[in-house]
Length: 413
Picture 1 (spheres, one colour):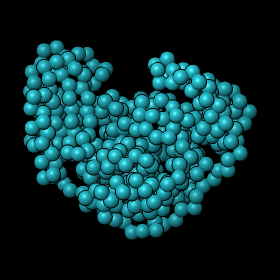
Picture 2 (cartoon, helix red, strand yellow):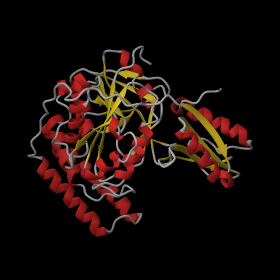
Picture 3 (cartoon, one colour):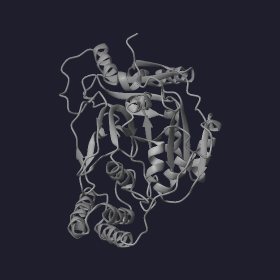
Picture 4 (cartoon, helix red, strand yellow):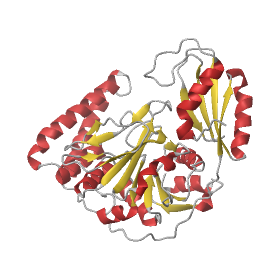
């Protein structure tokens, strides 16, 4: 942790997902870090969602209703008055200690970018961990310390990847680089920025304990099960990326490989029942059309200067984090008790253990503001572990508490 915490501006972009945005903001309210401010760039329904929150007057609200994630993020940067600008998706929820761990390497002046790990839909398995980008912009796994931050310098043949739903950058670096390229309407927007950071010689810190939970909510490009709805902007973004970062003589071969990979992905969804054969043909046509348009799409940077508004510190409360064990037949009553404790200023993890081998799942419940974990006493939480043999309820609660203690802010007292 830095001796003097840096001021952080959190930018959340939202379009057509008001319920997801409310859930995200409910999680942000429990962040145990200071000082930070919150900037939401949203369409009309997203703005209405923000205005329904009890702390809406503490949020900087920017109206934007166009399908361009890069422009939206740049609008957020323009309002950001913090030293560091952090980004989280509207369909994600941060762990309470997210910013604490994300900003832990900020004392190192060579670090310009920060990123953490992302848990997927079951709330336990990782969706993304440490990754780098090769010369073609494709991610490759990195092996590093799973608990301590690692600072990685720029790579001659690629870059360090920041995850779009869990990343932060020093604001002055974003200004110097011109922010996000508006040519990337959707997809590869942060990948392009990562490549430019590497070329400028900046270092990136990967902080594994800086975790967010990401659900892949539906949008115009995919449904809630990640089945593609449209591939136009994916094709366009790849064409723009090639023109900016990849030698022209390799474009055709790389595109053939990328297109084949997209076709395989579509066929898998067809086999599983998510798509019909005609959908595969239609989506590939849209992919090709986007790639064609991306060949001529203008790209560039955006002029960013000092923040247009003063820093508006979010009134975060210092909260004690507690873990409560319950059983299925007591869950309803204990949920109500847990919700009351959240209203009184606690961070509550409610673990419901059944006498079964059921795998565990974790969810953040936005109505009550509680972290709810369900599963069997003998079931897996971490999927790469063997099934437990005989274990008592109290012992299992201790194991689960230890697993999440750092991210959730639990202590032994």
